[in-house]
Image (cartoon, rainbow, N blue to C red):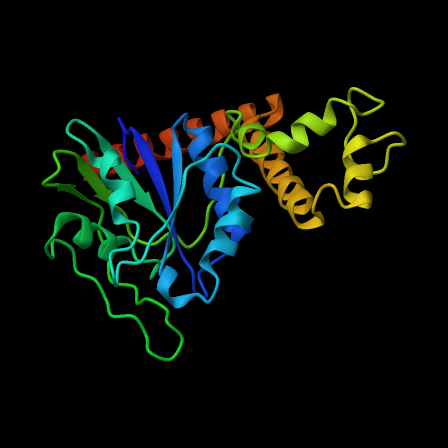
Length: 252
């Protein structure tokens, strides 16, 4: 989506958009790219206990800055100023209606991005951004505002899962077997942590799901010899048909 970034801000609204599992996926994606994340929880004014949401995310996003923001009354906006200091470039990612464009407008001090109104019935934002644009901010930095992301998919593993789930990776070091799959083996420290309540089942399930996705993606990228040979001959056959067709056209 962008290059040469200093920070990627994960923007999540404290309305129906709030989804800790999705934030875990964003973190894995960002770590896979070797970038630095920060989390912005918008629409804090619409949630009865926004601080509780911050604590919940803090418990799973280790050492990641978390900011509670309300664009309506500008609460917390000053915390984001250092990210757009002169020479810095950041990107905003999140689902549609999370408040990314509104956040850009508040930080810019004027309307530089089209932003939809928040629904009065459910407090949910409306999808408005359809293009990816770089906005030069008066603070001296730049923001890349992206359209809402509907799905986070992984192509390969660059250590993003390990970085996003350091608690599970630490537990895994104490398993009885070094090649433990954390599925059914005796002496599995990870499974015992789930059973005792030390590790939330939802977090473990999210970790396993992403591990499976990455393993599947890795397998798809490995071509066996038979498949390589088949694709080579398919290319040859296509070339032969093209040559024959050109000869016929030339003869006419």
